[in-house]
Image (cartoon, rainbow, N blue to C red; front, side, top):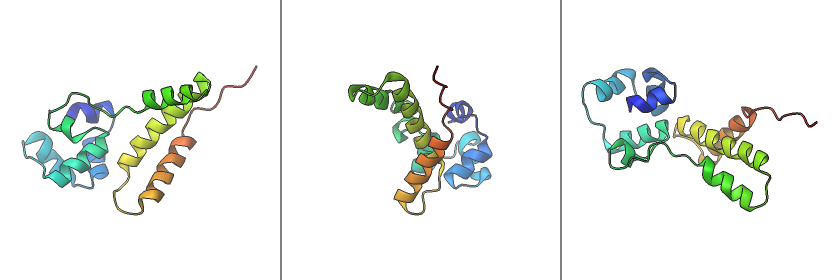
Length: 129
């Protein structure tokens, strides 16, 4: 978990907030060897955008990378590579944002919020020459 937290460039406190846990509780998991219950394990996996199997050491896949799949699907649909790349990156970012949102509330609203935030954060399009 420490490696993934570092890879996401977030603090333990931010990780705790994303999980809906106290920083002290996260510290106990990371530094004292305490084991989370199943519900907490799922929250941690979502906050880190990884599978629970990865957290348990059962799978080495690590982070869920959806952008290559989206990129290929869009290319198969005839979307130009440059445009497909932008959309695939936005989808990946939307999933990251969605995993960081609290689990409470309307799932549809949470999804729309994540998609909008990711779209707004996308790189500005290059001017046509």
